Image (cartoon, rainbow, N blue to C red; front, side):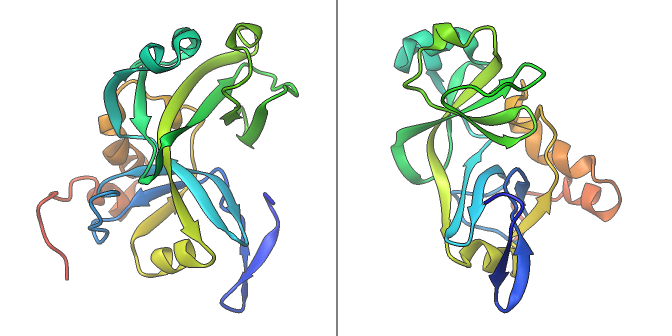
Length: 196
């Protein structure tokens, strides 16, 4: 549950639901190299997120015709992660104030997941924009925490627009630069340098 502490390795850990995982240069898994992941769930049993900066060339309207009008530019499917790439997760940014809405599960603020089986025409007044992800990133119990401890991920606060940027390829350096200091310097780290 969001906001509840959990015991990991003998210490309490707060839920990271709604946080960004930003891949560090140490992380060399090609599935996650220079990715920004929004955690949509983080519970004692594991974590689930979607990669925000891997756009495909497939228009949302080609796959989910009625949802295309609500999709933010670029209005294409995104590679959400390597797990179940044939499944879809929809992120939505709601208009303010956020109202209780059937099929919407709040992640943080006005951003949450949206059930794609709901009629999109009924949502036009409530939904500002959506982004659809094919697949997701998933971690079992303690796996994500271990990867963070190993230096694979920076855990950073998300801004409401991060999941819906117009230029997703620029998200990784953009998020790092806005942190300032040494973290901003990581944004300029060459992609082809090997770390031991």
